Image (cartoon, rainbow, N blue to C red):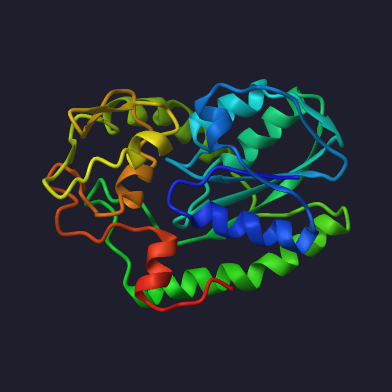
Length: 260
């Protein structure tokens, strides 16, 4: 069974194509995470958990969910991480998590996908050509990864050095507390009050009031709300006002690119 969470389509793209290669079920965890649904998940085939990377780690809300949900049947678990270029210590943390559940960690693979983080000027926008290159490169990588999983072989990604953990472990909570405020998010007059942002927030921290969304803390800065707004009415302060709102499916439509 392939399990995934995806904010703007990158992880969903990889997860669904790997599931198709494996002829396996593919489950979006968003609804279960939002509802705190920890009912057992059962699979006779290996679990393949696909996750984005936020601040060099798997999203905290996804990691916390996986700690609590019972996984039965197979004991083998693979991980797939999608990031803008650096998966950090995600693999190390995944290994620790799965071993604590008494299961077999079968390694992880890293996919470099288009960067979706828009709430900072630290990360320059990618040109359409680079976005398309990353998607195509990932598409070419999928058959190789799926083949190893199908054959029951370990996935091998880059080595995670000790200094990465030493830096990331104390840095991550500080960053998420200070650098991920919810207050700067707002909806412009283009907002049509559809409530989609409320429905897709994994932390249930968006509330519709008088037809407009209101953001509460904490915020994961997953970019789901800003990337999925159908009329691109959501902004983060002045940082995003001139930026393209990234969403994989929207990119396909705008660039007439086929989702292979």
